[in-house]
Length: 280
View 1: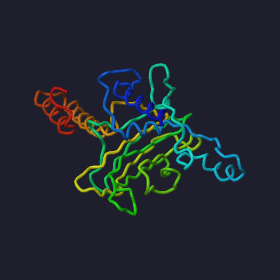
View 2 (view 1 turned 90 degrees about the horizontal axis):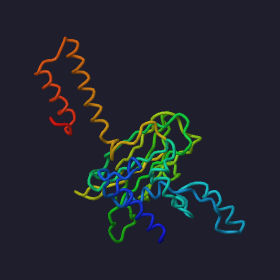
View 3 (view 1 turned 180 degrees about the horizontal axis):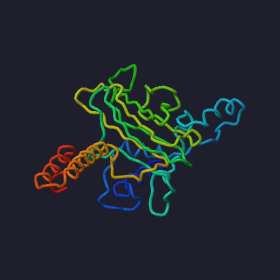
C-alpha cells in the first residue's frame, strides 16, 4: 500500500542518515540496509490490531481468537508503527532499545545447511515492554512447478534464562513455510537475565550461493546499543581482553615489563583479534 511504501522509504533514510544506534544523525553511522532489514524493522515495530472486520456472530467467534496473536491471517503482524523502531532525539523510550543486523556492506548470511548464529541480550529486572525478535530473508525463486515454494529455510528461536525455548509465529515449532519469523515474549513472561536469539540454516538448497538474512531484536536491555553487528564482534573482543589480562597479570607478578614484553602483548592482541593492528 502507499502508506507502507512511504514507511519503507523513511526507514531506509533513517538508516542511511546514521540515526542508528544513537538516535542522532551521525554521518559515520550511516549504512545502506538490505531490503530484508527494512521489512524486518517495519514488522518488528508493528502494533497488534484487535478490531473485528465482520459483524456476524461467526466472524466474532472465529476471528476474535486469532486477532489476539500476531502473525494471524487477518492482520498479519499488525499495523505499522515506526516510532517503535526509529529512535530519534526527543522520542527515546526509556530503556527500550532496538538491535539491527542487516548491513549491505557486511550482511549476515549462511552458506550451508546447519550453520548457526547466536545473539544474546540481557533483559532488565522489571521490563515494561515485550521482547521481540524478527527474522526476515529474501528467498531465491523456486523452480516451476514446485510442490513447495520455500527454497532456503532458516529457523529462529529464542531461549530464556531458565531454558524455555520460544518458536516463531505462534506455532510452537519451527516454521517450514514462511520467510518472516517472529518471536514475541509478553512482559508477563519475561525473566531477568540473558536471552539467547538463535538463527539457524535448517536447509540451504542453493549451491555456491549464500543466503543473507536480517534480524531485528527489541526490548528493554541492560547494555546500551553498540555499533552495527556489535553482537557478532563481542566474542573476539572478549578473547582479546582475556589474553591481555592474563599477560599483564604475569608481568606484574614477575615484577615488571620489558620492551620485549610489550611486543609480546601487542602480538598476542593482534593474534586474538585480527581487527587490532599495531596502530589500533
